[in-house]
Length: 249
Image 1 (cartoon, rainbow, N blue to C red):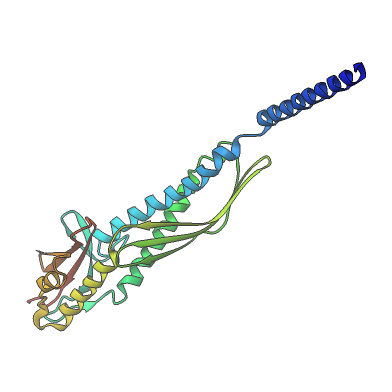
Image 2 (image 1 turned 135 degrees about the vertical axis):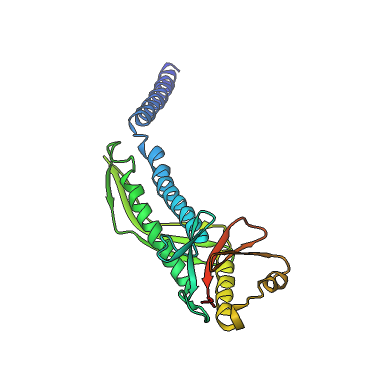
């Protein structure tokens, strides 16, 4: 009986020591394991995503109020904004379409702007100041304008490293809830009517009735130019354009 009791006691002591050893190893591992991945992984993606979202929204605001251009070169001032001439002549004749591929032009404008802004944003990123090694590849941006939203896809290889921790990502994207495609389509139709209709008369109110009130159009004038402001009634985003034709001598 004594031998059996001794064996049982040794078994119990062995189990206790084994459990204690496992607990010690677990606690030590938790203390030694760096918390960097838990902190840095979401922040890296977050930081780049925020840069893209801010640049995309800023670019959309600019092309909307400036007739499709980020930095207008040929424009008229209207209510504090530089509004690009999409159709223009100084003669008593139909205006000439200056942006026959308006949608493609705006997509390129937005892509170039986001690329430039993201580059600047990464220069100001805090990661190197925090001791991380940052390796960046070339930035490529593709913008796709849809009728109800605009998507910005960014190919941007980035690696951030500190000790044994490595974070890598190369694909980012953002979607913006603006009906830019619809507004550009109507802007292009207005330009075509300015060119084809006698004396450039545009029955823009017909677009409102045909859309059953889903589209709002305002027309203003400044000197010899006409300014159209287009928006969807369920979204505050607007698109402006300037045209000038049939200028009387």
